[in-house]
Image (spheres, rainbow, N blue to C red):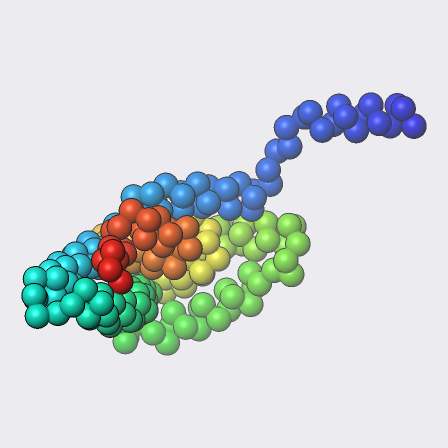
Length: 230
């Protein structure tokens, strides 16, 4: 018993080597964290500042109205705050929908296939999808990736653009960065479309992230300052 416990303690001190899928997930997580820190939403922040200034001006107008008693001023300022707050809350959902629409539009640029190539790319894609669909275990995933890599090398040798495109689409969908990047390098316009798409997706993910939204509110970039009277 003591020997088994000692062995377990020793094993616990040995750093565990992450598998390939785990390493990929870790890279994506670290990249996502770095991106989250750098993401800005200037359109929403400009709107937020404009709304704050408009509300402040209206509140000052009420404060300067000597015809109103203190209780009446507080009531009117509270009414202003409630109306503005309700509108402000609706802008969060509207901005999220805007970011989602932009991401969807940029995604079309990444996966765009001209009408003359659509049938051939679709046929190759369907065939590759069936051949590289894994059961979920590690060996199956490795075999699927190796098969797609072999097909990519064949596409390069033969100049088969339909095969390259189908492989690129699958690589993007499966998150296989190596093959994805090789495909993107074959076309500068597509590489630029990928950059726009990833930027749009990053903005959307950041906007939907509860922690990022909380920080946006706490720093005042995404929130309004409530009048003391309200």
